[in-house]
Length: 435
Image 1: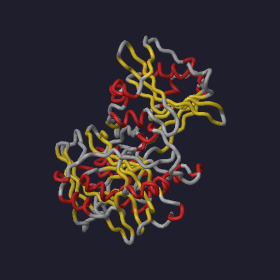
Image 2: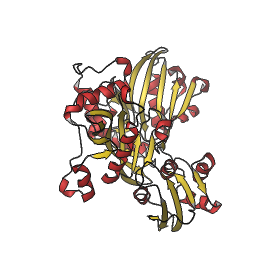
Image 3: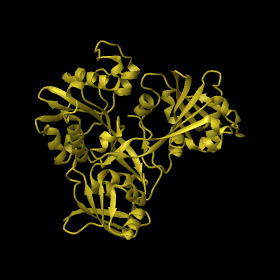
Image 4: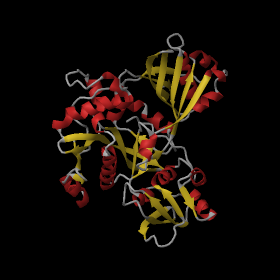
């Protein structure tokens, strides 16, 4: 979708309440070699939208500032704070910073979402996007955001800058006729939900992601303008209720393709298995309108257990959003370590793109609380890891044994693996937001 100039929805903060380091950051522009990292002012809005429009929709040709755009789409894009790399007076790379609140190991903490990273074709492969990524990390650190996430256009590119896959997701495709065997004995009814009724869905959303790492808290703007609104097509939302209590809901759109029309479910949330079955029944009832149903989420492999004709189902597992620790001590100290009464180890971290992380750290956990300090690297650490692997361990994407097996983590002894397994247990991870 092509973007046009618009007011940004930002967090209002009084400069008088900021620590000195933040005041310094916002009072200056960050110099990186000959380039400069700074907010994108109004005079550069058309250039900004031309860059992002071409980057994410090159098939539509150059950006046309006179092309009309409806208010519905405008509001969908009005999140976050825009930043750019400027080579002289030329905007050569851009990105948008969005603040999320996510749950990690039972604690709610801020997370940066980096969106809309782009560079114009004539200025690519000159290092400007890398400079944007590094400067963004510095700003996140000064804001006190310990972790960050993004949706990559190419995983290998961001991996070079310390980002790593943070979750997986399933895309299940099934013919609606195959859902005819789904049965539920629970009584209930479906009702269409309008954007202003989003609060009706919040308890279901929270129950669906209960205990899942990187579950989010959504504000009203995000519900109305991101969840209910697609990129370029209208989304519909129906909830399944028992009495007046919603038990499940789905947000979907209809998409035309070469293989026929599809019902694409972008979000399906449910409180229990009965609700899940009824949502599948709702999809089946579109069998006269669509040739396929496409389900997106972290848990749709369960479809294989409820549909009789399993040959009619295709479940694809794909790498999801990438994430990264912004500041090692802040990130490790932000989460609890339940059941850990006493544990100590030293960790050497390789992070050439964030020099404050490129060091050896002493990690001490006492009664479930961690304290992390940078220490001299004279002695060999108990473990060494790149920042991406440490980020995966923190959110529970993989176990320490798996990290050691597939690469990224080296340990001195098997006892160190045991300590890491206790500190960073593998866990279900899913970041549900699109940005």
